[in-house]
Image (cartoon, rainbow, N blue to C red; front, side, top):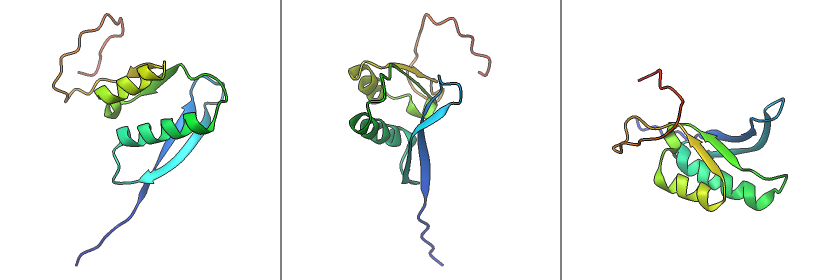
Length: 103
């Protein structure tokens, strides 16, 4: 029996610097879409529709550790803070003082 399931996932841009972690832009995307692609779509839509203030930093998980994501954020004058994907092929050296306790 062939079953086709259609679904969605919620991608949420949140003001993590506010007292209440206010949701700024909730967006449903097809479940088959990768989080990195959902981020690009959501961030571009958000910047086109809202000018509530300046966004100068983004905190993202390892699914967003890709060159084009860094390029997009730097082009928008936004500082990326992205968890490194340990399955990635690159060896990244940083001068960061954050200790890596998990790997």
